[in-house]
Amino acid sequence: MPSLDVIELPVKFHLSLNVPDLNRAIDFYRVLFGRPPAKRHDDYAKFELDDPPVVFSLVPHPPGPGASLSHLGFRVGTAAAIQEYRDRLEAAGICTQAQDGTVCGYAKQNKLWVKDPFGNFWDIYHIEGDIPPESVRTSVEGTAARVDAEPTAESVAWEHFVANPLPDRIPHADATVDEVRLVGSFNADLSEDQRAFLVGEAARVLKPGGKVLTHGLMADKPFPRSQPKLSGLAAMVSRVPVQGEPIDAFRQAGFVGVQLVKFDKPWFTHDGVELREVKMIAWKPAATPTAETRQVLYKGPFATATADGGHAFHRGQRTTVPLAVWQQLRHGPSAEQFLFFEPGQPSACSTS
Image (tube, rainbow, N blue to C red):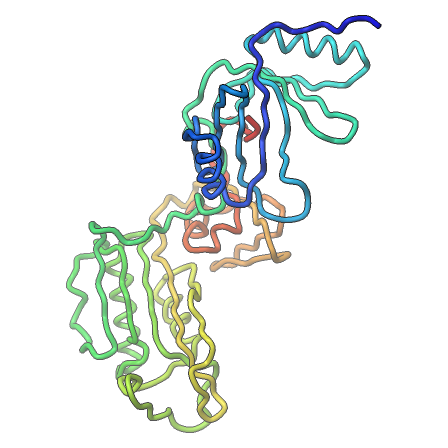
């Protein structure tokens, strides 16, 4: 039997796993390996082990059917070593695919791909140098896509409570506030014009991209007779709006991306009308040039989703939208249903 050629060059085994929760995976493998990751980003992490010599990478991937293995591979010391693998494989009639100068795992690489008879992918690659994340990231998704942040000590907020009188104006200059909270404001004894004024004032003082929140008791449909007389803590409630009323008020004031973030079981029923605690959020649109566009891809779960303004997104298809819409979609939990493509960046992958 002829002896096999041995490639005597620095080689490290490579293993890449798909994981549904990147942060939890990093926490576990940090303990298992006894060291922090050599690289860590929102969409990629890598551990470098010396004993055994392994490159172990983690890639976020939604849970579902299929194995968690992404691919296997070897990291070699020179580009010449890649050619030796290629010559040996192709001499045996095995098809390979070369990628020279590609960007993967935030590094510039030359690599060779090959698939075994059972569909497992292997890559043999040589790293030429690391690449700054901002220069290669072509898209963001999951929690990294969200641009709405939790309030900080530096955040400016203003709050109106159900029992507070209506102010002559919100005591802030235009576009200086990060968040306006209308807690029970739609339950207060205010006229329709007064409620519209309050929401309009919120739009005035919020910064572009700022958030408005309303929280209160709401009804699932109009009352057939008079409004209920409530007792206890609920006695502060002068009226119970239909849950669509705040949505309409926000939209009329120019807010976008209205979302229900709390919708409890009914506290009680009055005249066949369900009354429940509801919390809604919306955003003041960012001021952006109208000519600039970006691309998004809707991941599902629905066949089609439609945003404020009529933009429709079909599952699995790229859609070009104005920059303002691209930014609007990145607010709130629904941002995690989209993939957001950055403009003018080279292609990147997450396999090393």
